[in-house]
Length: 261
Image 1 (cartoon, rainbow, N blue to C red):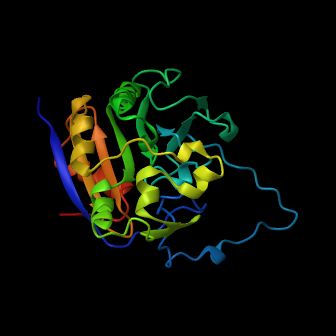
Image 2 (cartoon, helix red, strand yellow):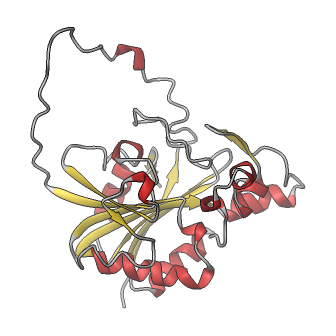
């Protein structure tokens, strides 16, 4: 069966577009935003009550296992007003729309969402559960929909380990320095504090992630990897093949500073 792939290169820097800092230990989505002037946001006028306008959403995306994060901590594209966010998380404390895990969110109707976003969550699954998760992703997506998936790039991490830098900081996140050891097995400080969500049970290289998605029925792909200090993978996956131009356009909206090769 025909597949379409577009491979993209990343610029070395990534400008943040979110207004709320992501507290995920491995997330770079809010770093390197020196060009943003948060002080320019004016405070509300005293004594004036402003009613929020009613939004008419054109499309819905599923935000999977995002914990406390919401659409403004996803991608440039999903942060737009046209997208309605539907959240799924196994922890009810985060008040998701649906309390469920990655391998079974059957409360979400089949072929009901235009897109989904999954960031640094697949690594919590056992290897044999990944295919089930991707099958569930595909079930929920409309035929013309797409998935945006990001997570650690174990190929880049392995290069640091091979250089005997297992316990040296690879980068600094909002919760502090992150070592290759933390990326592979889970953030040690968070796990020690009782956060079992941070335990890592699997991981991917770019090739392995694309192969697993293809094996579960996805047919269109755009992908890229960012080198240190980011060390992450970004993939657009579609249930049906799409032209390269359309895949590249999706990547330009949802990848961090993607640049066509």
